[in-house]
Image (cartoon, rainbow, N blue to C red):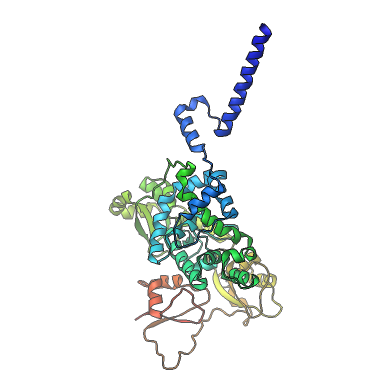
Length: 473
């Protein structure tokens, strides 16, 4: 009898263990001290309904838009990644949609682009405006430095407009529209945005001049092969998030703000103290400001401030600005001087590459680092070409000691003679090596990039050394 009772107890214990294992599969272990309500929410959040391939295919076919939503095993795999394997990442994206979707939708409408392109920013950066890739691409739309500059996104030691959601989205819309006009196909336009139009054209040639994304798929770079499938997958998961039991209780909303125009050095950490707000909030409102401060040379730069602090600033502006500039200037200048690739406190000259020149000898001649020459001229390896012009930033006064003929800089480039019968009347500017429209607009009060374009009938932000620009009447 005793043995029988013990056996029944053993069976009950085994059943309890099996039940415990079964529960562990469906929900994480939570201590009793967390309370039943939290356990209920965790089970609700963590339970993932099963959606098979055919079910997903049927749902996706019901999603209408201008951009094709091709469904296959590759797309299905990414759907499982976003909806099942990396729910934490997707939850974070869903919590930030109220911040970034309204901004992106505004510019898509401005340029007449499909609304679903707003999901592309998720594929690019996961809604992180300060994201930087290993290759150096940055911001919501992951612009490379050169491409960003060519679309008017200013970048220097203090400011990087690739991180500004408004300005980078405006630039991204222009770039995407250009890619679509180039290929006439949305999937190819997305592939070109990711890898560049040259790689897409190369894939088209290698495929025997086929024109569809999935027809040239295997000839595209590896990253681009996953780019369009991710774009389709993230659209689907965002559309049917509730079906995958995503419950967003910590949704983040944008802060209302107004601007404070700054014309001098200001330490944003001290400014946050003066306004009695968290520096992180000020940092979030101003993602394009790379450091904790703005320099003396800044001219009318708008610093975004929580709207409830604007009245206080207007009443105490002078005192706030003085107190916000007490410390940090020397620290920032030291950082600027010692940061690799920095041009702070240096003068630019242009070296014309001659036969026998290599980066090592050029660096030695000007007392600079090879790595800095690469950064200044966007060179990845060591290849330079005879006749190539290299921007070199040297300490003040040193350029006068170098052999004439190597240095092709300090003189202003004279413009070519105007075309026959064409006379330009008004103030003009001769474009110098390294100039951008943003740089030129900052040199003259009341001059903007759009005004320069309008005065000169420019359709893009590309300018070349020696070009003549009208800058005023």
